[in-house]
Length: 232
Length: 361
Image 1 (cartoon, rainbow over the protein chains, first blue to last red):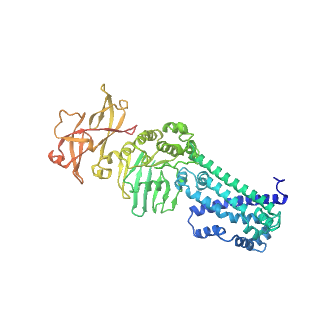
Image 2: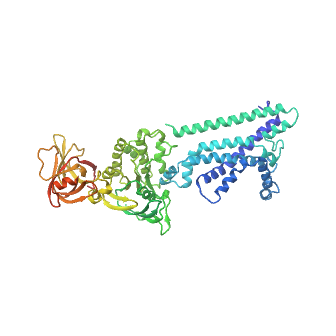
Image 3: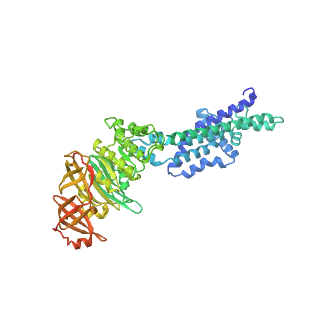
């Protein structure tokens, strides 16, 4: 594959995979928590949280990217603190690309997991409670295994979304080859220069292959888990 | 073991105001659906927080609204058998059975092999709940509750979702459990046949209130409670002893009401049995009937005639030291000139062996 793709193209593919993997892995625990809170808890500000989570789905990605730049940029409210106290800089780094991808993919992840949690019969969790399991144990031994298909689906959906993220990423962290030039940014760049169509086409094929693989994997895993639960 | 329950809770439509004490053995909560039985059990389990009240098990306060005590369900250690089994679909039968073990404090308890044997679920241990029949599921649920080493077993209509054949399949297991494990049980049911077979104590609930509570034998043969229990279900309970198995296949029983003959009772001579004689299965005659196929005819005295709504009356009879109930029409009562003190003969059309009472008699 390294021969087939130029080093520059390969770099974009590898970066995209790394950015998406980190984006999904780092946001998954928060995603499960938010999904659980939205599905099961009644608290003031629940509507606001729901809106906030879904905002990136509706806002123009450029706006989301710009808001990220305002917040997490070197002079942004949060970015300043991260830089001065922890030495963490997100703007124009691959970590910033991961943050942008995570924010954009978050609503999809939360939606899938939330639906799975809402499908779990709370009476099963009550039964576990009467058998001596405390709340955290009930979650770990009953809720979590039952929502596993939803978590897998949400994770893969979020990964695919992160792989394709373009608008917010290019606004927040720009399009620096080797740093922040993800797969979509690279395709966009190649299309800007004369004669870049062939390179772009190769990357398009890679993008399609990854997306298909992700979809097939999620189908297969979800079916395997469902079979295990229903099984004889 | 004593469970003291006192609680008040207002639901839309019905207000619960319940107080009773459950001694050791099986205590049945009986009442129409919607009378609040399940809410009482949920409150004992900690799944419902009553607006006011106090629940104490063996001196340990589980809930006390005045003192602000409310133990969460997982710290109450109640084995709860739900009407709908609620097995964990992602676990095998064996994993379901041992689930509560993880959380039970160390100590002696019923062991898996014994419970599996008692419930007859050995062949399905490796299966998942999705592939089980309703009766199998309910038996696994019972085993799961017992193996969590509970201090009290709560059973909410554990047989209601099953057809008669399945019920008949599980009832003997429940009897064996009651006698074999010595666990106190709170049993919710609207089926009087189950109650008569299993319960030592009966609590009758109507529209959120306790209308009567006490020993099941006394309550079931009290004509005043007949409208609550249901006329078809009303009947006396007698304790009898197996006297002899006779050559023609009949078993002679000695009861406080007199000798009774039943077809082949599967119990050795000397064994104590509980017999249930439904009021609708008792006919009355003013003279000893001649040329009649019924085997069991007992002399008795009319003690009380109770007029209900409709064309029937309920007659309470003193037969020896026992009480019998008979349901006849008002017209017959008039024709026979029945009145308290009048000697009659009770013709028993059917006698059911309600339970084998080991020990307690």
